[in-house]
Amino acid sequence: MASLDLPYRCPRCGEHKRFRSLSSLRAHLEYNHTYETLYVLSKSNSVCDAAALLPLVADGDLLLAPSVPGGNRSNNINDPFDGLQLRSSAFRDFKERRFPCRELPCPDNLGGLSTTSNAAARYIPNVEFPLGEIFVKKAMSAAGDPHGSHGNQSTAVAVAANVAASAVEAAYEEGLARLKARAFERLELDERLEKLSEEVEQKIAARVGRLQAELERKSGELERAKHESERLGQEKQDLEDKASELSRQVDVSVEMLANLKQDLVSKEEELTHKQQ
Image 1 (cartoon, rainbow, N blue to C red):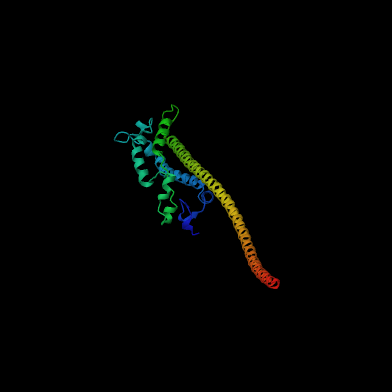
Image 2 (tube, rainbow, N blue to C red):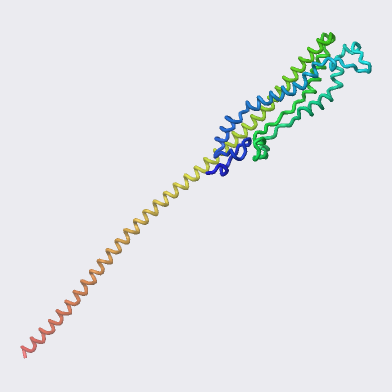
């Protein structure tokens, strides 16, 4: 059977990878497209987002940006995250331009990818994480601490770096949770499909078994009827032969009786003639 005639195809490899059963497709997905691959890619996506975040955090001008013209930094050192709040929207725009994100497709939509392109066959989209919002919330919570960032610029930079690391970790955990949820959904769907396929195969096998037993029974009855017909035909032939033999014997007997009758008539005539 050609590979294109097989019923199940790999949603990531495309049409050139097709399989006879769901179990073989599942084994291919587990050994060639493991969920650990998605795990590593999600981690790399989170690190890439953090790479865009850390240079901005390390910049003291961003943390201690003046809220009024003139740039009197000492007047704003008590609230070092005002500039961060003002630049959160600009940071999101920069992040979206530099690192465009796409949401993961549903498993049902994986079949719609182009099968003629190897890049489309290996398509694994990025996961969108709200790093800007997480960073701002973490920074504001750190700024609200009475023993927090009221020190010098180096303390603010250290706090911001810790916040960035926390944001990266949160984004990483969120992406990992999403990937695990998608993986469990696909695994559950594969299990349901495999269970349904097994039930259908069992029903078909039982039906075929019953039909095969019925066919064997009918074949046996037909064979017995054939033997019976042959036996009856042989008996009929024997009876016909016996009837022919009896008919011949009857003819011979009739002929002998006719001859004897003729002889008897002749003898009577001869006896009458002698008596006269």
